[in-house]
Image (cartoon, rainbow, N blue to C red; front, side, top):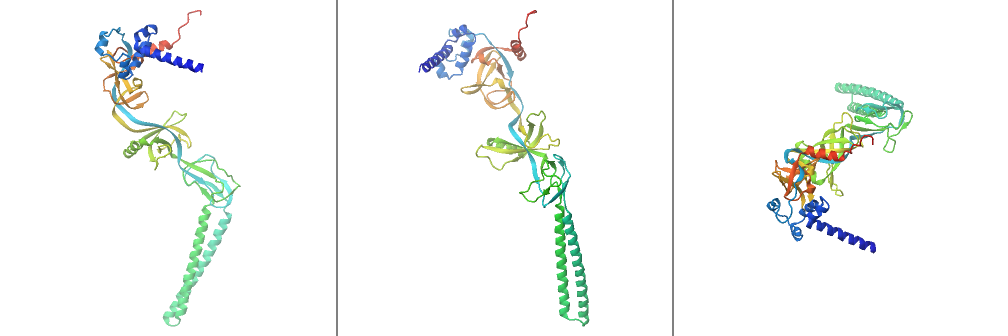
Length: 429
């Protein structure tokens, strides 16, 4: 209980100190230089009604310049200014994506047989139709020869039936034969022809099965580890061990998720062909360029995101399946975006604001709407005009209508480096 009371009293004293600093900033500044100016900046961010209750509502600029109101005129605040520019700025989205092969095929045997040869190395690049393995095909070759012999026999029987049918038809035409004999001969021909067709179909089936004993790559890509070597028995079916897996990596996909609010922009950019994507593998310095190719057909209701796939040529195989990448999607480029340095934008209780230099003499606080941030720049939607100058360094010491003394950016950087540079030790130290 005593500790709680002490903490409560400490909080009240601290709050009273903050209020005192805002009410009597000049007195506080004499005790702690710089603290009064910060209190003025804090007071400027308060609503006018609250500032009026403190007895220090913002005064007109003319009174401040003339030193009216009984307060001593403050010296100008040293600041760095930067111009408001208009230049092309991309509409860009950043995300984390994973590399996915364009196609993945698990290679399995379609027959039960012993493996005679494995003709590719583990992890090798293969082309569509390239032979991966050969199986023992002696049994199927014998069956093919047997089927060929049966077909030859039945074709010979068909030729004999056709000759008999021709002779009986000739005898019937001369009046020496009977109609029933001629009809039976025709039936025999049709039966022999059907038997020969069945033999041909059986032979074709065996030849197709013979092709299963040569395992070929169904797609071009990179093969994984061949799990079964020569001498093993390859089994057919999904339950059997696969020979290998082939991933198509050229072209290749990079999949990532974006908030659903970007869906209209993505669709518009894809329709115009402007949706470009840049993928940088994590830990790498090179990047690959591609384009947004696929939008998922539904938004994930649990996360409110949509899955997007960008396609890359990947001829140099820089992107590898399963790899994580930093993805940057450029939807379009705004030709005349209003841009200021990122450090110019400050955040207050009423939103974003900047200090605008009025004829390089005083700083005016102005509310702005920020469209987006890109690297070290902020794209302004409203509140600023091209050609104006904003404060990018020294804002902490500013209040509305405060006098300023602009200095060059290089000078400001040099001063900062001088403060960080350690003092040189005297000789012999």
